[in-house]
Length: 303
Image 1 (cartoon, helix red, strand yellow):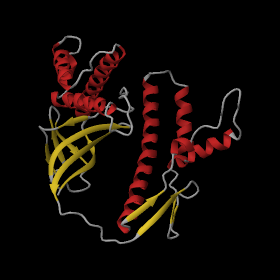
Image 2: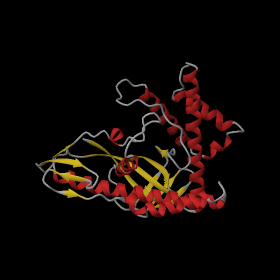
Image 3: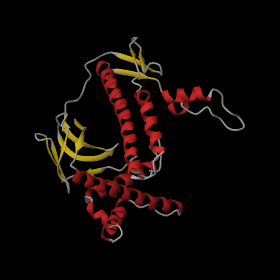
Image 4: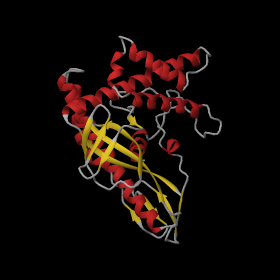
């Protein structure tokens, strides 16, 4: 059977390479938001939506114009991939078979950014830990594991000032079977992250609580700086790095815990929790104010 697998590495570009990647990320974000705004306007006017072919025509027109000529600095295939992603997002939003239908959102700088996807034109050199990207040339990356299979595409993303490369591969593998025969039940909690039906208890990592004081201090310092000034930008970057550390610690803990459980058990049964309902605010309304609001707020943060 064919297996599609992804590998993620930390990208370490030089300053001039990072500048070009930032411009390409900005171009992809602009294309996503511009096309999304056009489709939202068409929805309001009850006009037919733009699909990929029309989107690609608009991108070509913008690149030839004087106002949006900066798009020519970004790889054409990455802009086309952004249009394809938006096209797929709109099709999913109106697909009756999709359980959750949602109109795509706008991309923001530093939050929910659009990545740069290269379906071709790249070359991976694992021996020297470098990858060749269109218009950027060879970029060094942290080679933490060997890539297996044929590389189909690569995607560059940015989070908390760091660049990440995701490599998708395809290869033939034997039909998988699980060597274990055990089944386990898993109960999630707050004081303990999880309790297994065999009595095993897993303590939470609490990455947010450990860095909450440092984060609060950094946010107070940001408040006293002139908005959008150089010092404000530096402090904003420090806050983003703290948030990135919190997220990375949490993700690392979840991956290691879930891997350990899944490797030793063939079946895992977990309760179907409605997290959104559990973490609703207890503040209530003006006519019917809530009770124990402060305590419920702390519980929501733990959840």
